[in-house]
Length: 522
Image 1 (spheres, rainbow, N blue to C red):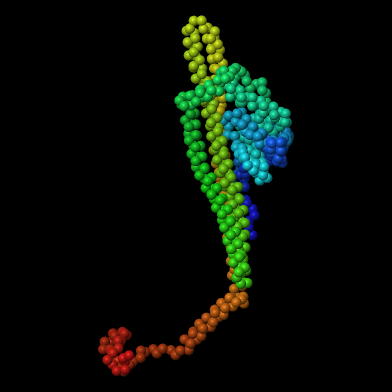
Image 2: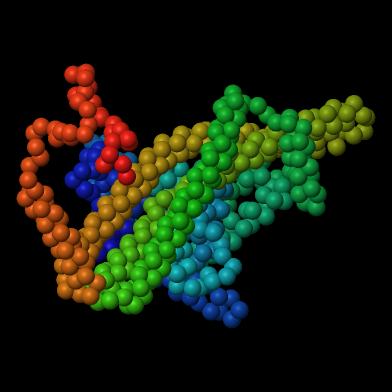
């Protein structure tokens, strides 16, 4: 029978260390079972059609005792559970709401490696298979955010999980207003507090630093100028970040190759499953056209091939789940690291643009002070410089905080992904071992079935048996005839018409006859 389990099963001959790793190193998000995304419902509101999901948060009572796995290593405590005991909630959210959360996490915690969201899909997005696949991906995204040490206490996450429809819509409107102001040149302190819209603009951020009509063009020109001229502010960690960028880029290239090979392996496994099905079908048809005994045995081969086809198809699905899908997810996480590095670069460019603006205005202020009768313009320029300096100080702090966060995140990324990669490889190895053992067992059970009944009284079978019996009888008769022959004489026979050898040493040599002797010619 085919092995219906898609998970690698422990066997007595498996290495204990490998089994311990597989059984103890479950993925961290699998333990956050109190966060669920369920009950997808498709809504049709006129031309607007969308799918809503029920998001439940049911944190159990917190256990302060640190837990350990089978390797005696302490598991990281669930800080979200520790800070949200007994705060149950159940809300309805759609994909665009998850996308809003994803974007807000990037803004509130710039430099964090935000877990990836499932991609958008234009066609077949309401099919049951796609809806279920997206539900699982959204649930995994939300659990990863809750486990993320940099994201688990974000304001946007709390509103997403517990905000009612009015509160959540208000938060989305406030964040949209913040984004418009930021694009228009109005600075904001920190990541923007959407819980209290009166605190996200303070100090220098309360002033419009550039004219409203030319703000976007001027900001773009300033950032493009600093980027193209490579005249960005420097920091002691620039060399380290350059090394990180090279590492991530190289890792991305190599991981794409591995992912492509994994996809090809899964594709070939599916082809093998299809090939075994066609092979079994051909033997079934061949068995139907043959005699009774031979036909049954050919059909046994076909049935075995069908069983192996089912087993291979299940194995291909398991390979996709255990090998191809993790590598694709790993590629998405690498892209998330690139986005985090890009956020740091944006902070660096913004800080550099403010410094360049301050230098330009200081030059302009010096020129105004040297011109009589332009004291009012000089005073206005001096006030604007002070506002820019305050904004630059905020930008500098944001840049430094983002840089340190990126360093922490890259270090965590390396640690966690190394463990996950090891687990993926071990699971794949165990999967291949179990497949080969199952196939060997199935083929081995077929051999005695094909060998049994070889002495059956069938047309073809009886002829073969009779031929074997006659050959054995004739062999026995030949041996009996050879036994009944008289023994060979001990001395060599003598011939009177052949002269005796004169040399005693030639007595045992070959004697050639003389053709002239009478009676010896042919």
